[in-house]
Length: 393
Image (cartoon, rainbow, N blue to C red; front, side, top):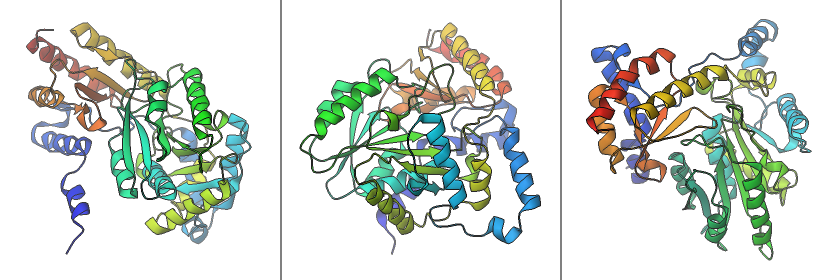
């Protein structure tokens, strides 16, 4: 009667979403101020003023039928040109609007790209820890996930990536700034990876593609985020405005195929075909136009930095071991017991809602999303202190 695979995915929601729903239930039972929910990466700072200003301007100046009607399947031509111009200006890549596809957020960007690339037997390398939905997206496209662990500092182990490449490797999926670790991959390590890929591409029928998942590009604390297209020709950027402009619920982003990519036009045609096959055509019209006027902007990064510093310093003082985030808004903390799931269950006694790392492809850590109100972090600190004492830290 139903697709059993889809039924299983529906019944076994992501761990992150399960904890988020549990948190909503607890807030109703005991009050929102008593629950410290660090589960979901839902931006807590307002959108930049330019976002609301442009939305209001459009609503007041553009005919409703035109503003809310369908755009071209790949996006409004003027919006695609604005994105291409931004990439050309900001990153020095000769981007063409004909290689820009507007999407319904990061998930659509990734699933479209993966389905555009994937053929029977293809392998996709991911760097663990990684966003859990990568596995869902890759396997649903028909690919095989190949996990390559990050190094001890949660940066790229370039040699290990090179060793994991086989004749079946279709693409490598990178996410920097990284969810869940906050790592920002450096120019040096990305250049080294590019050099290995150039070497590995010799004699291959098709070149290995780098897929750059970039929802956190603007959210850094001093670290520079290299633009992969400028380092490696066979690159596809999957971008989302959800985090930078605090527009998570509006589902808006884009795919940019490097003009230097092998058979770039054919790949873009496959992107259009995959978008069509999955029903991801004509991204939200209003927010296509809003974001076209806000490219490169972000919300109040200083607020995230303050949250990061407050939480990180307090947890380290309590005896926990944490990875200092260079970007995004996640803190990756080592569990004081090997079983991170058990640690998260114990944390619930103090109404601390943390995400165990198991579904991220590693064991023994938890992810803490600090994109919350400062009051939530301040209120949680006594609970973290009690939890630390329980472990004798």
